[in-house]
Amino acid sequence: MTCRYCGAEISGSHSRCVRCQRRLDGGPGRRTGAAAQYVATAAAPAVQEDVSAAARARFYVKEGGAAVRTTAPVQPPLFRDPTNVIGLDQYLSPAPPRRRVSSRRSRTAPPAAPPQQIALDFDAPPPGAHEFAAAQRRMPVASPARRAFAFLVDLSFVLVGFSLFLALVRGIVGYWPASAAFHAGLGACLWLLASIYHFLHAAVGRRTPGQFAAGLILITREGRQGEPIHRVKRVLSNTVPVVSLMGALWAAITEEHLTFADLITGTYHTVADAN
Image (cartoon, rainbow, N blue to C red):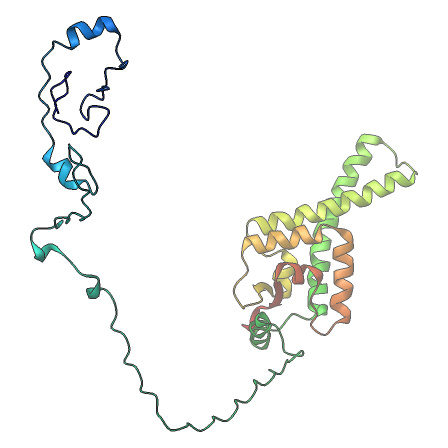
């Protein structure tokens, strides 16, 4: 049977053309009657089938109701040269040989002993304490008497400067006010002047005259020479009166003779002849 619109060969069991999908019984089509006047007389275009597309199709029906193809196509190899193919077996580690299971019943292994509890030594010093103990044996902490002598020498220099300050204030004011606030202000000025005195020596990394007269040097807990940053930290720690006074009392009553500034900065004074 031939389609009267496009001239394609179709079987009698189809109600539509397999090419142009028009009805064969003369019913209404997709196009209007005006368009059918020249479509019916137009020559059917030649359709060239894609051979590669037909080969890739897994299931397709031929024109005229042919049988269904169920065979899957074979994919061509990706690499024509087999030397370019690298197998996974070259990267996999060889499997360990399997151990043969003995037919005899193996003896039961003795139960493993439970792990023993590790003994805890609560009296052991921390890791950093060993270095400090070794440094103390080589360079012991200076005695409180020697450090007190250095403090008195430095205090004498501070008092000389403070006396000049008082003379300047007396010359400007002309009298001494008897109020408690004025005397508290003088005490604060004395403490500030002492802090500035020690800070100037610490900033340049030099010992104060009192430390030089007492033969004191500053070292770290590991035994290294103290740096200017360590001296500045000590001055800032002693700036607070409570820390300085209570630290001096703590050094006098404890066995290690370390002040709060020594514990905060990790440094201490030792005798220059001890190293």
